[in-house]
Length: 538
Image 1 (cartoon, rainbow, N blue to C red):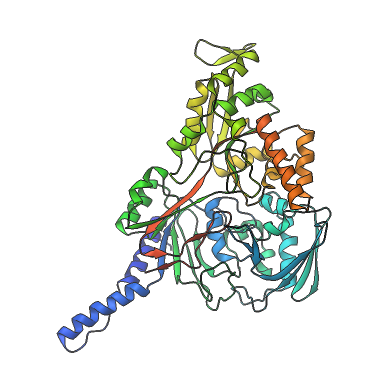
Image 2 (spheres, rainbow, N blue to C red; image 1 turned 180 degrees about the vertical axis):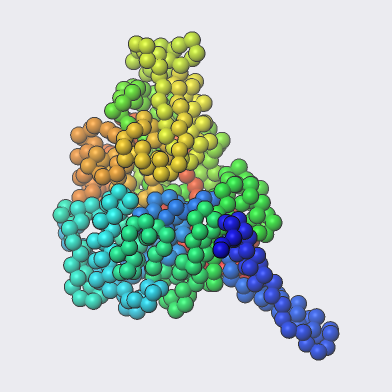
């Protein structure tokens, strides 16, 4: 019979601490014994590579092809490798599981050759057949794999040429596929994993990554252990061979104060999501901070323009310029961040500033509303034809950002109501279209993220808009191979989306984690997810 979840977590943590405190045998001479014991204890502490990394929430799913929550992606990245890797500084794609690749001129066909010697943690080999099984099975996951459907848009088949080479074909040009092949979402799992049910895959997967899943107790903890014999990390990693950490335990600690307190006391080596308000407190030599801005679409109010007051362009435009993003960043953001200036974050390839069109102008926002017939009511909220100027935003995180926006918009007479829900209910609202505003951002290291968010042809689009010009531009950029021509289209998309206020940015999200100063080697990938291959304790 298993002990309760909190007791299990305590057992795991105590076990790891005990490993760090193991002594050495006593020798005959007391003075020598004392010196030897001290030296051995120091060596043991230095060589112990059992890391405790406190998570802020349950991952909910660890299958990279299904998971969309950042915490789940952070864990999944340690378990699976991808065909390609992407340099977070330059955006360059480099080899990983695939040693080479080419694309045809219209980007409908992609040839890959796999590197030799790669195996999964169940001992099976990575072959072209396994990759084909991954892509075929991923397309069958349906709604639970919404990001896969976007990366593999137009997918027709993967043809196996021989054991190590294959061709991926699409029915239409797919300009974002190669970048997608570097993501966790298209991480490769074993052939057996591809045959499991979506529910089973969420609980346990077999990958070729540098770590192997040891245990996962939902809402309690996870443990991963080093993969013996691993020797196929990408060239972006800091060393070759096996990972440095012998094991990483992830207790799930939802209370911010408990995570920060555990870091201070030494209970935890690393914590996920250091609250921005605590950033300055941990900016000392005793700790290390890790900050990276999410690429993609910043935290935003994402509109359903088919319903309520948001059907009026003037209302959406008033909300756009009625927000003081500098103040929101100062109140709720990281010291490492900046206010958003486009519907793409400043770290996203293809970003072009729209700062002028998004500039805070409270008086201008009020003028827009008054010209549109919205009159201030007795309670300060505007009205027209008996209708209140109000809309509800549905979100599942960053409530402080939404509250700041709520306060600011009240000053122009707009009543923003907050509906904070679970992640499952949030994505359920997207699936059913039962929302007015969505409050969230969408991470991806490619401007095609705007198509995923806005195209009504995309199976899991978030915004609801009826704009033929925008739809045509979104489709065109996804099928344009020439980089300069594609950038011009992406510039037009950003300008149009800001002008029509389909997406109203609020904050650029910074992934902010913290560790004790004894930890080194934590890095971010191009999507601001952590890679722990080089992590070690001093």
